[in-house]
Each structure stands twice: as C-alpha cells, then as structure tokens.
Length: 255
Picture 1 (cartoon, rainbow, N blue to C red):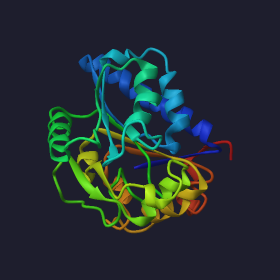
Picture 2: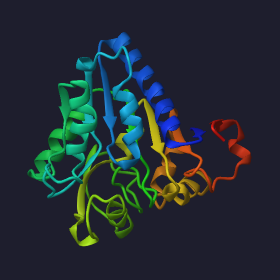
Picture 3: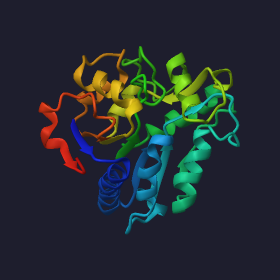
C-alpha cells in the first residue's frame, strides 16, 4: 500500500484523478472496456470533478458499479448515493453501462443482481472513501472480513450515522437510515487496483487507527494494507496524526 499526502484537497483530487484516468485508459486500450467501482460522498467531490474532466477517456466503454446505498431512502433524497453517482459521474460523462443499488427495492433481489453483475468479470479499479469510524464502504466496525458475498445488507453504527448528519445530508440522526447495502470487504479486496481518496481533518483519527494500528475488523480500512495495489490519497489535514517519519517520501506538494 502506498500513501500520498498533498497540501490541500484540490491538489489531492487532481492527482488521484490523473491516476484513475490512467488506469481507465489502459484498461480500455488492453481489453476495449474498463470496469470500475465508485464511491460518492462529500469527500469525493474534488476527485470526481477532476476525473470527469479528464481527457481521452471513452466513457461509453466504461462500466460502473455502485459501492453502497441506504436501505429505504428514495433516490430523490439529497443523501441518496445513487442520486449523487448519477449527478457527479454518470450524467457528466455520458456513461451508459452502470449498476445502481436500489435502496427502495426488494433487498434480496437487489443484492442478488448486483452480486452477480460485479462478480462476472474482474474489476479494474475502485474509488473509495474511508469513514470517520474507519469504515470501508458501509462496513462499519467490527467489519466482516470473511464473507465472500459481493454485496451485503448491513446495520450502520451510530458513529457512521452521525457522520452523515455532519455532512449535512440529514438534519438529525433520527432521519439517517439504520441499514444499508454495501459492497463487502472481500469483494473490494478482489479489485485489481484501489484508490482511497480521504481529505479533511475529521478523518485524521481514522487514518491513524487504520494505517498505524493493527489490521483489524475494528479498523475496517486497515485491510487495505494487505492489498497488492492500493494507494491512499490524503491531504495535510487527514494525515495530521500520522507519524511523519515513515511517510516523509509521501509528502508530494504543498507542505
């Protein structure tokens, strides 16, 4: 796993987008198509803005999978991740081949369809965030590191639900759904390459726990340290609690 640290979230987003665009272009060159997994959240805004402006990508050859979604939340709600995915990535690029997680649908059927689709062929790259509680997708601690199911129905912990209020998608915690559909940890680990885009000081404690503590289901994103090709993009705020010595070479610009 590599850690790259930038001076601000804009430069972080641009660098991560250049990395992602390069992987997408190469997949299209090699196989005529690219398959990717995308997260949508406040932390992904600068990254997705830069990625959707990247040149020389034929987005009609890109297939997109959804990372997670609340159960019971309509797509019209501002906190709906499938609504954000449409707005921030799909509609801006003209992607036609995409798989949304219908949190309003019959959950077992949604899980079965999404799991069959994502597992049908290898995934080239995943764009992820890391939660304030260290979660990866909606795999809150203690995360299930063992299940082979590509998608799961999960119960959200209070810290995760508080984060959604803090990001202004919901006015108070009583409005945040208690359950969600999430890609599993093992499915994420099967992706050929993973980019974690994690700006902001509110993520600093989780970054320290996941990347300087033990690899543990209690720090779900710590599992990325076992991925053969994972890169974590941080800004100076999210990296603030890391021991600087091991990461000196990761400080790229703006610091």
